[in-house]
Image 1 (cartoon, rainbow, N blue to C red):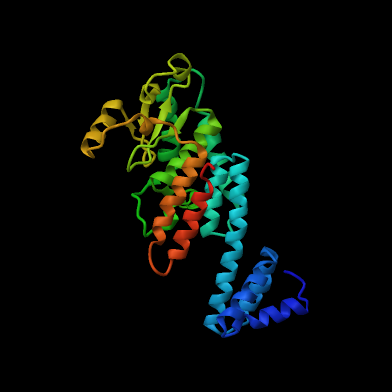
Image 2 (cartoon, rainbow, N blue to C red; image 1 turned 30 degrees about the horizontal axis):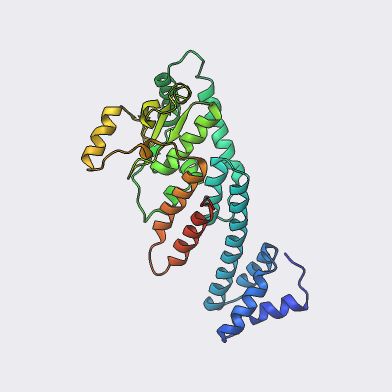
Length: 291
């Protein structure tokens, strides 16, 4: 909590000013103090009986969290941050008080259990079978369909805590584990799906001009770990009446995955009451664009 001087005390008293212009000036000034002012605002919230003032305080606290988050996203982009770090930043939008240590501990536990079962002699299918067995059978991670009225399904902290996630949150969890275990599983740009692929890392060196799909050994559905063949994917494209192009089989990098997650989460807030959240999430996605 910032030490309350005369200026801060006066500003806090003016939060209830009926003049919108005065309120916006006060709000901007308080926000300029940064997140150190949040405890002062929370204290005021607890000691006010007016729902209107409480709502104004909540808006200010949200703006402070969002300002802080925006700065951290820019830093993540500049530092080419990891996938887990990016996913936890998005979770922080919905859960500002999130402690990333818990998620990291849960993932480390999973990684260790899988690592104990892996060895250098396993085929790609056997490696993925071990991951699937630990994640979906032993750990009991469940897959649920994407529902835009359930924003919590998109956040990795909730996927770990509740042991259930949609294709995107489960998929990010799967990718994080594979990265830690040095298993070459990547996310693809397949339309209307969040699909993973086991990639032959040597293929690109030997056949640099080959179609991207040629370096994929098989595909993985992160909802439940189900394996799909090239033929299955061809059938899928026929079913949705889309011509498969090489870009659909290109690996998505961490930045693009996080951008995609932001775009998908934003759809959960497509209503008059929450449209500002939709716009904020889309502004974070835009922030990750290459200049």
